[in-house]
Length: 418
Image 1 (cartoon, rainbow, N blue to C red):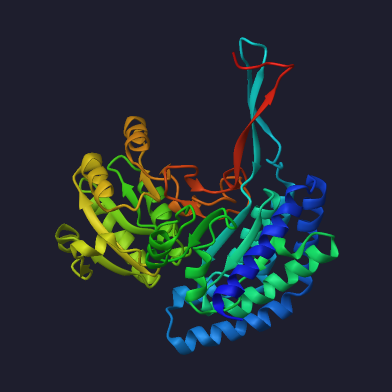
Image 2: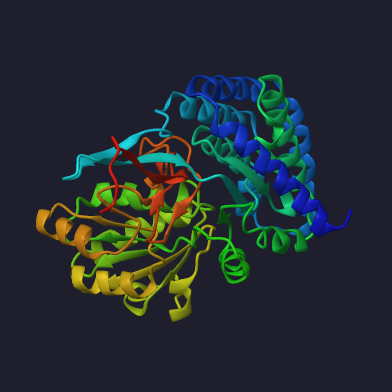
């Protein structure tokens, strides 16, 4: 079978799965999700064995340590995947929720109800845990999912999908509720993007190049998860110990994620006190520091940052540092270089904190907290499908509600249009 026919067949399977899932009760969906979680734990050794094949491939290919970290499955991460499914099962089902209702002068009652989107195509790279997260969220919101992971994780993804589909079949759901395009050829993605009328929404998760390619070629609406060029601004009125902990967490805790800090902005009033201590701690953790001219005068050992570096999403232990002349300068820098993902201020000045919240145009803006907290679990949404930097339909972590749309419902007793 050629690639076009193969992808079309998979999409039709997902379409059939969506029809069945749209009728499923909350109780049935929750039961299936819990059974899937248990199955992942029971078959963890099988998943890790397949994942090792992908890790070897990645190492042979010379991928960075950060990307290999995103790819790696451990018992802990499989436990987290399983827990994610159980947490989604415990969340309220948005499908069928009446958002609001109002009565018209003619006695007709109009309302809006949440309904599934249908078939959601997920195109993603590296992280196999996305397979389980995407499947669980889409299923709970009544959607089938058409998955296309990267070639570097094909064995891991194939194994996870097999576990989930086995459970779906056993529990009486159509296997098409979770469908995986398990061929690495990039032409498969291009064919997937042509399936208007079968696939209802495309969500790409991965590097900027992938997302731009999907957006430029898709005939289907795309909900974008663009790169994370995230900032932390340490204000002159910050608690410097708190700022140190927040900045360290934002960069070092897991640098290969989209909500990790890529640029630290430091108010010049406290730079001589804060910067030497912070740079030493970063260097002890293996972080390569690139700084502006003022930063280099304070800590000469750091490398010089170039203007183009401020646009980069490193996804690694590399950090830009810039000294700024207060909050105005900091916000101007963020407006110019930020990808509108996650940006934070550390300050004890209430007025400045509120100004930062109002004026910084990102999907999540933080006061005295790490950018690493921009996450569906951390926000209480359960597993997320991604973090949207779009402004239409969904913005920020996309949980269950963001995977539904609404339709108008009307109750009448014989009303006619005059």
